[in-house]
Image (cartoon, rainbow, N blue to C red; front, side, top):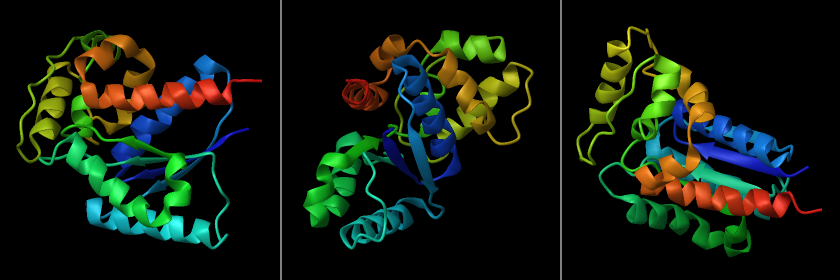
Length: 199
C-alpha cells in the first residue's frame, strides 16, 4: 500500500488535494495511506516545515513515504517561480527529489474550484465563469464566494467545505485543458498512480 505525505500551506489546499488523491485512488483501485501536514503561516512557514521533514527523513526520524505532495499557491510569482522555490528547499536533500510532486494553483486554490463550470453546476446548481488570470490579493476568494453566494448556498468557510464535492464532479481532462497549473499536477498524479497500480 503506497503512502503519500501531503504538505499544504493551508486547510483549503489540504481538503482539495485529499479529495483529488481519493478520487485517483478509487479510479485506479489503489489504496493510499495519506499523511497530511497542513502548515499554518503561509509559504515561508511551509518551506521551513518541509525542510525539517526532509531533514528528519535523512536522519531516519520519519518513515519514508512513497511520494511527497507539496502544495502552495503561486500568488503573483507564477507557477515556474514558485516551483523553483520549492525545489530550492529540496535541493539540500537530493536523495529525496524523486519523491516530490508539486501542486501549485496559479494564482490561488480558489481558481481551481472554478475550472469546470459543469462540476460547479452539479454542486451549486448553477455554472460559473472561470476568471481570467490576474494578480490581485484575495481576488479569487471574493470571486469564488460571490459565485457560491449567487447560487443561494451558504459557504461560511469560503467554499473550502465544498472542495471534495467539486473534485468528485470534475471532468479532469476538461479541467486540465482549462487550467495549466492543475494540468501539471494531474499529469504527475497519473504517473504516480500508474506506477502504483502495476502488479
